[in-house]
Length: 305
Ligand SMILES: Nc1ncnc2c1ncn2[C@@H]1O[C@H](COP(=O)(O)OP(=O)(O)OP(=O)(O)O)[C@@H](O)[C@H]1O
Image 1 (spheres, rainbow, N blue to C red):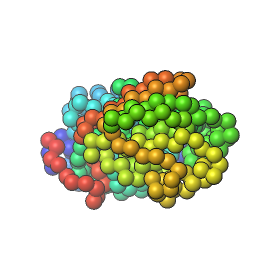
Image 2 (tube, rainbow, N blue to C red; image 1 turned 90 degrees about the vertical axis):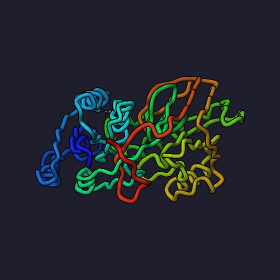
Image 3 (cartoon, rainbow, N blue to C red; image 1 turned 180 degrees about the horizontal axis):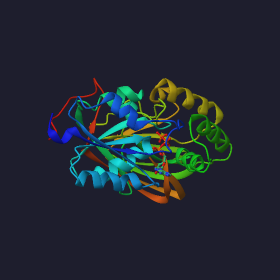
């Protein structure tokens, strides 16, 4: 194993997920111990955005793997900090949804996820950017972004809060006329949800783009123009069953660059966290821009020094 991969910095978000009794240091000692020749350090975040700074600092200090201990928001911050450094990101899933970890085949059981770090397998994944800001799993505009904003304000986290907020906001949210340019196509339509998927799922095995390949240099673009009740039921079922593309409830495209103008400013999310509002969106993909530690059986291994 290259020596750099034996130096691990774990960046721990104490507020992700719902389990507050998590002994990370005890887990690391039990699973990694002293037998594997690894050096590992834990650094806790103190505020939103801190994980990006900590990750950049760890890369500059010569750590070879920086582990995001949290959910997709933490993964996004750590990934942002590592872009361009050549340092690999690993994930110890501790969030509510854990979309990227699930896509990469990383076990949700903490002991098994940590065990992957003994001999990390690293490969490069594509990175999306929405108005210049990176995302690794999914980004989007419309209802899903609106729900992520309301979820952030809800006071409690977890799947049950998310479902409660989504059902409440479904009564209120209205679609917006948009113009979409992608892959030589111009589309004028209403937009209820426009999702840009680098990975297949939002998290919690909700498959917004089950065919998305995180190494193919393309984003899977999912458009839902209206969401009357009958279609909402189809979408919910399609997300869970992984058959949304064949359900007739959503339209799909693939592209590496997309431009969207909206009639009114729309909220957008990056990896499930609300990230602001705009009426003009440029989305692009950087192929294979981030090395990541993957689960057993995922993709092909490449050498990272
Ligand atoms: N110390 C901290 N105090 C407050 N907020 C923090 C802190 N550290 C990180 N955060 C913020 O916590 C938010 C939620 O974290 P994260 O997304 O990892 O968990 P989650 O929402 O439970 O998981 P998932 O995104 O997989 O559903 C992130 O947006 C991050 O910026």
